[in-house]
Amino acid sequence: MPATVMKDTAAPSAQTSKQAAPQILVPFTRASHEHIEPMADVTQPITATSTALGPYDVPAYGYLRNIVLDVQASGGTGTGVAGTEDSPWNIISEIALIDVNGAPVVGPFSGYDLYLINKYGGYSYASDPKQSPMYSGIGATTGNFRFLLRVPVEFSAREGLGALPNANAASTWKLRITLNPASQVYSTAPATLPSVRIRMYLDAWSQPAQTDLKGNATAQQPPAIGTTSYWSKTTMPVSAGFNTLRLPRMGSLIRGLFFVFRDSGGSRANGDGAFPDTPALYWDTRLLKQYQKDLWCHELFRKTGFSAAKESANGLDKGVFVEDYMHDFDGKIGGELRDQYIGTTQSTRYELNGTFTSAGTLTVITNDVAAASEIFVN
Image (cartoon, rainbow, N blue to C red; front, side, top):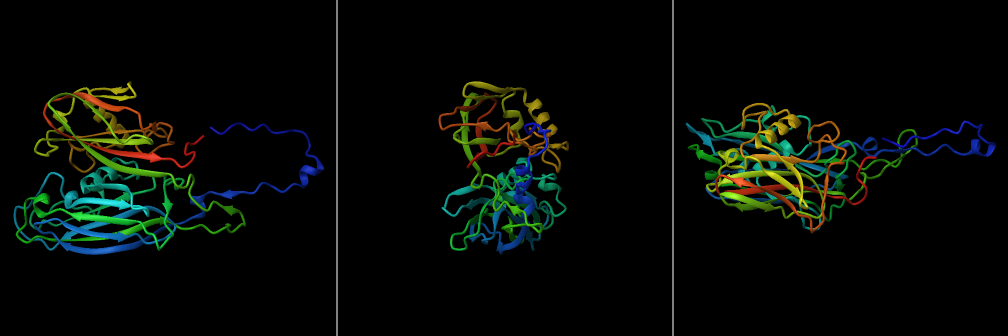
């Protein structure tokens, strides 16, 4: 809470009364405005081979918040068409958002990874992309589908925290996308493969005017400008039996971690069963949590409200376990004051251990925040 200010009950002196009132600084998100504009619109047939698209220049405008993707497949025909486990999200085999210095801020990872980030990353009230009125899964007689996802940059819409400068048309952000071959998207392919249209949109904050309508000065940029939220992933081999898995992405503030187990065939279907019954999370040898995995799933339900059957709309996902540090304000993922972020250095040991019932791989999707200055709410 803000510090208590005691009033001076003595009458003001003549000198004090002549002093000007303190200047009000209008917060950035009050002075700025939300801005969305088309960025690119490309249509590409799904083929038997992967297809690289882009890179696409992000339009220079204000402060970058997100890139919105509207992915729609149409024109397919057939009977008994069925998608693979991660479809339709995995039409994107790789996506990466690259900053002006050529470094990835989001990715590279798959469309399914991006789906998980949208669902559990704490960015919106209605966070399950399957619940969007625009969503449609693989059509049984067409193979057509549609979904919308965001490539996130900003991580606190209340303040604009994490939005990054994007006003230099000579040095632009870039979005790179690669499409999967049909065999990765369909377990039973349509007779006529559809084409995929990807419409991309810039989601940004405008540059505020110097003053508001009352003449008050305005904040010209988001707080702690330069603070950057990174999304990355690491895939580690897991053997049947007891494993201690050390996470490599250390050195910043950890906002969230997603653990995705796949068996040796690459499937998540039995991921819940193969995952340790009572996993443990350690931070520099200190035990953070050790609980039965069903309780872990219950805690995830409690913070998201996802209560339907797994893999269904409004349901959790098989083989996916989310450990977040962004619910300290109201108990919901994304309801955060940032007090629970895990501080790390390059030497920090963050480990997951437990007994896996079968061999496979564990993909760890990490959201870490590199703070340019103070980001905590006092």
